[in-house]
Image (cartoon, rainbow, N blue to C red; front, side):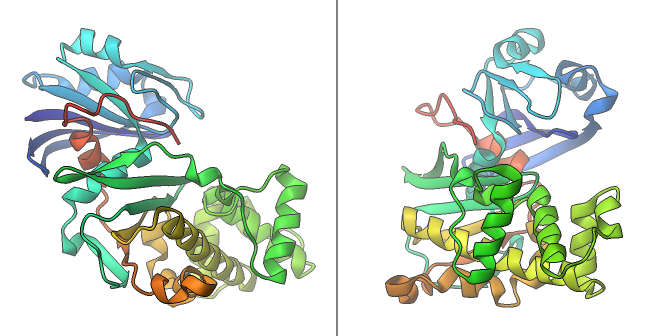
Length: 328
């Protein structure tokens, strides 16, 4: 089957012509577009499909809540209607899915070389999996076995409450409440969250806002400085981020009894692989009281495939039972 696959974010759109055979996906051609340079998604699709043969289906992963038919982007003045796209470009069908649900669909396409194991564990065939990832926000996808493949369930898991486990984290919670009211885990495990943790560390040290906060991309600047050991507050920020990332992944593993494994994606995660592999993540992940021994058995992997969103979108909905996808 020939699929027009897309990963549509707030800043960039990536499109691909994908060949799907079973649960194998081959990306034949990939295009990347800056959204600000185009009046809407239809213009981008028209540019990408120029001269292309008609695709069998269209599957687009979108960074926003969708019922499968329509989406209005949070950080982009676009509204996309799947039926209108199908009509204009003569797709037999078109489906919109949440971007992290696409990651869940894409897990079946991953090969061992596209995964970096943090904990080998003992994968239990057919058991639930959880994909989560820090990026602009915190995406969560709970995946259950459906026939011969895994299917993601609609989830708003990134918005569960933050549960501190130390006095320092208690103070971080108070800091976030003062800034935002309710403190969800997304307020921490995201690019904006990383910046807030850095502000917290500066406040704890009695320091004024530093130059990293005025960088064009402060989360990236903080990450680079912290990994290089060039800024003590940034290094402490990353350590706290990794610990809470592990705690949250562990809570989700318990909630889903994810004996099939935990898969970490998102834009931030691969860049912090040395930090996550240092032990801070697993320390938080495993510290679950009476379930600590079981936590050691859950496989944990970092997803290294930059195209998993495109591949997952291509796989989404290809079984007849899937007609609608939920939102984050």
